[in-house]
Length: 265
Image (cartoon, rainbow, N blue to C red; front, side, top):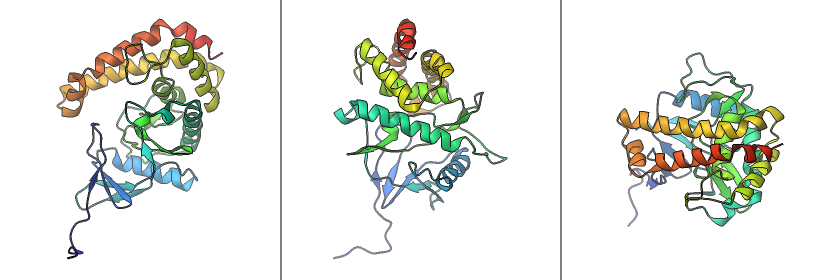
């Protein structure tokens, strides 16, 4: 017996313990919206019109009020990371992808009523993705394919975005971080590799490591702010010790700032 063609299409859960409940329906992804959704969709339209294809297209909202985006074939990485996500080739690919994305946003003019998830940071050189990490990248057998989850996008300096991506992919983590840790010398080498792949300028190379420290301190503050405002997801992350892990990683970065920065020169 075949099903009624008028039945709602099957939904496949895609979220993996994050902040949002995300589902796939056929060739689309459905996600909760926020005050920033219209601005993010304008950004995604701009990217597509400018020839940047490594991001999903936006297709408005469905009958339930969820945003509708392209489903991008490939694999999203979660911790513990698969070996292919830890390679130098992937690190370089992410650096190049982030540079291409930033360059594609440099001429974006936000709508007059633009709303962003995070405040605009000066200098607003580009539109930061805001959360470039393995879980927001789509991979195939050839390497990195695309960026997803643009909810936290906001105008800001390139180095603000790059610092968090470097933290996640180099990675700049302390020895007790079981998610992904490498010896300090290897962190320094890979940090240089990442900055070179991006084509980072001299001034931003000096700012990259202290910005990574600042970025993690900002993240911890944001987690506690959102939890205090009633977010069950962020409260759960704090209960699981994520804030303590980020503080330990921030201390690791501060402790080794001189050596990591020297590797970038």
